Image 1: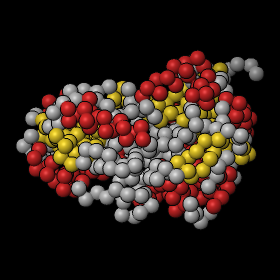
Image 2: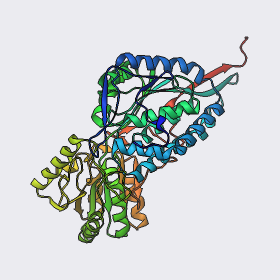
Image 3: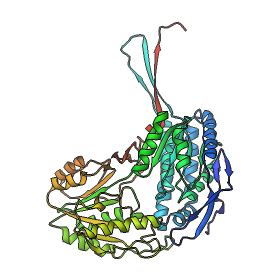
Image 4: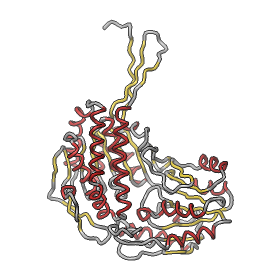
Length: 483
């Protein structure tokens, strides 16, 4: 891999300010051609305990640094990421597969969280509350929760780390990161830049492993970990939540989604097509907030599908390192099989393939549109995580709201229309944590990201994002007491 700064391509874990290896390693593969990018340490419980202990030791000093000191380090960290964005994007594309344009966007998005929370660090305000007793004074303090465990996914291996560690570090917490086994090199590159930025030893630690089970158990049961932040599947989130119960940890979970995308008959159809493509086909459909169910009102259904097919037909598959590529490979063979099975099942139940509908080669799946889909089909109940757009026809507003809300998930939803009254009605009626109106792109550093129902809880980004990393302490003082 050609990099301007080869030091960013790290193949050792980072624990307590030291780069550690292991006799046991696992391969990190390029999903485009299945070549081995690197071998990284396959660590376990012993090394995880070392990382937790290092973070606990570092917390004693880091939590007492001034907010301005933490802010300056976070800003320096962000600047280093932007300085090395080309190399970081190349690493990301090679281990994850997404087009280089998207990787560059993710690096900038990831750096923005560090910038944002560098500005929030000095604004972790407490309160003075008027007391009902004349001789009492009530103070409210916000203090860092402690050592934080961050378990991050492979689909956004840079930004999902910075989105978690930025508020944690800003609040005065220390962090142990367990990146996904498919994409550990991006996490290790971030650790290298944190080291260059000057974070004290133990403040940030990265543990790599091929199997997450043993490390996950330690992170969720070790009493020194006081907060877990996890992004991943709902099934794994439920397991981690149960494991955290024994030590009553603070938890935030960003889990699966089943996002509806609604097109009303008064929508600007070309804009709606653009929004649907931006939402669905980014990262080959491997995002938790991407469109999973496309609902189109019956009076514009045929026109919309025609426009959509025309646009999707022009999307180019290929290596993410090729500038012209729009669609990269899926992460692994299991992902391809899952997508293909969902499409086959829908066709067997009466859906029609408008475009694509099959794997292309290696780990690629053709950009796909399927019509005549109904809400009873398996494909509408499962998170597809691939470049497949199921299109469902609907008649009336209330009907589509009921269909959209008919899911255990509640992460993101989208709709297009011009009627201002309807915009307010539908935005309030959709049972999701994030709603995009006349846009297919909703992620923003300044906005609170998070779901409801079985999509999890807690907010990342925005002024609310730091709340999960602090404890609120109430101090009551009797001003007339003898000291």
